[in-house]
Structure formats: structure tokens, C-alpha cells
Image (cartoon, rainbow, N blue to C red; front, side, top):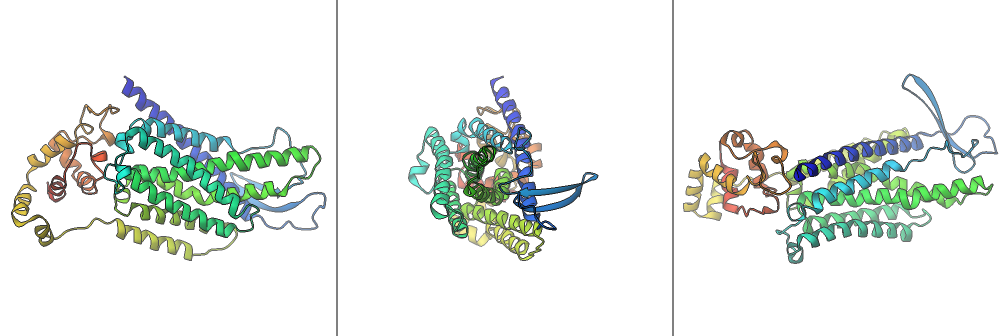
Length: 412
């Protein structure tokens, strides 16, 4: 019952996380679109107000006329004023709760990376690797915030700041892929960006807006830096959005995070997300810059080539393994019993009708490997997961290279 309750809690948290994230991202993208679609108002502007721009639109069977004022709006700032922050906080809090429930409680399986090329990382205990993961989120935000404060505190060097943030995220991707398991590395890199996004709202955007409202209600002039800093952080959130969404769902694609160059693949996906977002930002301004989606397509092809599995020829395999061993291995490739025996020993603690691995009440992804019929049904996924070394998770069951080779060459 305890395992079931944990799994049901996982479902509820994921449900909340997805709903809150969709609401936050949707609202954020809408306001970015609105900002970039504003045009100069027609006629002589009313000098009592600082109307920045306006946009007319049609949607949902009606017409809208949106206007943006910087510091002197013509309407009262009362309790009807819409604030946008709870969606952000709910998204981060539910996501962190999910991370605690799944990754921190199962750090030895989902976080630890005993195959890390860094000896100190490979030797981390489950508690230590969990602390390292949480520390990465905190340090990531602190470094990002310090970059913003030092490089462009008054928004005079935002281009240089963007480059610095890109280099920071490259470092995060490289670090996470060498310290944590592949899937966790992708998720944590996205979580660093998501933490920066939500912290931007909590520490900068909303406090600045509250100071502006308070000043106006007191009959004072707001500090223009509050608006500019909020805008700066909102722009960063805009370009973080698409990379974060992909990194959070990347656990479905083992070929990406089980690759030796996973950190570089991560960086390319982050860059692609930013380029795609820039394309839409410019489209809202009336510019159709097709070089951006073209560049994104080229980078996707680069990822496809980098992540593609390498097929060794029979000659190469003989040179590496020795003729006798190859003969024995090739003879075994058609042996269903041999493959089933390996899977029984290495995989069925999780992938069985009644898993014995703690935390599982059902086989992950519904894949059972405790009978020949299901093994044949899922043979493509089995070969991919085993060859990429994604499975078994953390290699807790000690599958060796010869067993991986045999399964990858097996033809059911």
C-alpha cells in the first residue's frame, strides 16, 4: 500500500505540475506576443498618460483592444488589477516536490552515476548525490543572478549578459552530465533554468511591480529601473521556456542522454529552443526571419548524427573481441533462451508482473521482461536501451559489455 500511495502521489503531483506549467507558459507567451505586437497609437497622445503602444485583435467571437502604459495608467490600481505569479510558484513547487518524491528518494537508482569519468562523482553516496543535485539548483540561481547584477544592472549590456548566461548553461550541462545519470542530467539542467525563471518572478519581477504600484498609489513617480529590470528578467524567461519544456520531457529519448556527448546535445537543444523562440518573437514584430528555423533544422541534423548509434562491422568486432569469442557470440544471437536468461537476471527486478525493486508496484512503462512473448514484443526498445547503456538504471544489476553486445546483435 505504501508503494501504491507513493505512485498515486506521483500521479497527482505530475498532474498539478503539468497544468500549472501550461497555464504559466501560456500566459507568459501571450504577454510576450502582446509586448512585441504593440504599435504606436494613432492621433495625438494624451500627455497625462504614458501610452507605450496598443494592439487590436480578434478572437473567441469578439474583438479586443489592448493598451500598455509604462508608469501612468488611466485606470485605478485596485484589487481588480491582475497579477501573474501563482502559476509560476505552483509550477516550481510541484516540480520540486516531484523531484524529491522520485529522484531524491531513489537517488541510488535515478541520480547516482557510478560510471562517471570523474572519480569523486562516481564515489558519491545516494545522500551526497542528492545534496549535489539540490545544491546545483541553488548555485545555478545564485550565479545567474550575480551575472545579471554585475554585467547589466541597468540593462545597458544585455547582449553581453545573454552570452554570459549561455556560457553558464553550457557549464551546467557539462557538469550535470558528468556527475549525474543521463536522464537526471537533462532534467537537472532544465531545472536550473526553471529555478531561475521562477526566482526571477519571486525576487525581481513581482517585487518591482509591487513597488511601482505602491509609488503610484502614493502619488509618487515609480523608479523606472523596476520596470526595466522586470522586463529584462521576463525576456530571459522567454528564451528559457522552450529549452526547459524539452529537457523536462527528454526522459523518453535515451539516445540523447545516454550518449557520450550528452552535454553537447543538451547545449544544442537549448540553443535550438532559443532560436525558435526568437523566430516567434520577431514574427510578432512583423518580421519573418526564415534563417532562424533553417539554422534550427541544421542543428537538429547535427544532433541526429551525433546521437546515432555506431554499427560495427563483423571485421571490427573480430578485431576487438577475438575470432573465437565472436563465433560463440554470433552463435548465441539467435538463442532466445540466452537473452531471456540475461534479462531475467539483470532486468526483472523492475520489469516483471510483480517487481521486487523498492518503489515499483508495476513494471515501468508497462514493459514486462519475464516472459518470451513480451520480450519479443519489446525487442527493439530492449536493444536500444541496453546498447545505449541507459538500462539497467545505474547498472545496479551489473550487466556487462559482453551481455550488452549479445543482446544488441540478437535477432528474434
